[in-house]
Image (cartoon, rainbow, N blue to C red; front, side, top):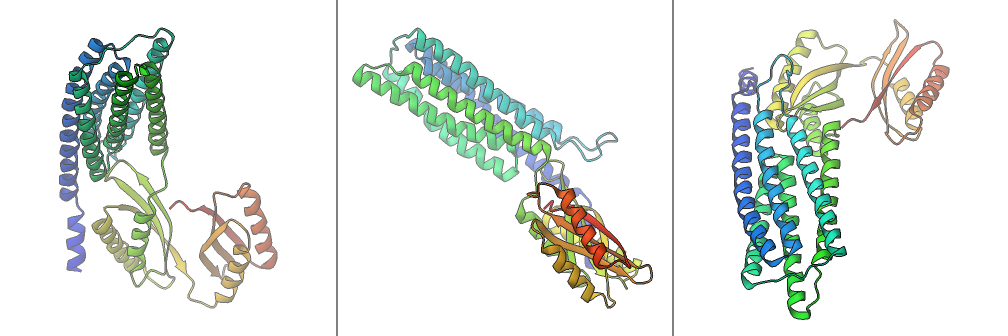
Length: 385
């Protein structure tokens, strides 16, 4: 009992608050590094680009400037997302980070479209670039800086589970490839006197546009709500199933309210002879253990009664019948009440099923035909995790 109290006390909030604050500090520090680095690179590259007449270097400078803006937006989003829950938003503001990631994606896409427009103009009206050793050295330093910055920001993004930082880091690594391509174009011009500036600018623009579209898709998917990672779902189920009084874990549903703000609900199967006091004690233990080991907050634990009577033969027969259909993944929550002449259970249908209601009605009709003396109640479920 003392151990349970200690675990519950540990999940009360201070540690979570401290972890959130540390995460916020890491994201802001990382973003500031990104802002400073990109502003310096943008200034140098812009100067080199205008002096040499290189459209590719100028576009690279604009791209660095957009990256600095992205870092500013990341800081703003992080500060807003860390606001405490209030009456209007009881689950906090964590999802603002997903909107931040969307804004950064749009900036990247806009930069790519603008760059493509300028490159096409240069293809139609070409200009001969004038490279210098200083210009090429600055671009080379920019390549090294972007590689370092990209790896650093992406690593911090994974550490803090920040999509905005991960996107910024990925974008920075892409920029290093773009800058390297600029050096290649310069080398080709100096050796063969063939200018590929405008064409390289167009290729760079397409790469930026593609990256922006992919980021938008990812951010949209997060906002819509994705299935939880299999690792976290399996871990939660493993913890719950480790309790002696639990005979099954079902209908595990996650609600993501931002990084480190995952709530979940679940059904557990227990003997129909267990009393309310024991169930209350058991669910509190489960909630504390899951939070302690995964950080997931179980906001609701519902109960399926496990039939301890002589219904095993009917249960097995119904299970065989239902699972014989394609796209039925599971049957659970089975309970037979002889006194009330009722049979209850849930079926989990695969998302691949094209006509779920037709299949559901077909199963209902077959079970009712096999057991006409019973009131059959079947619940249609999906495999949410």
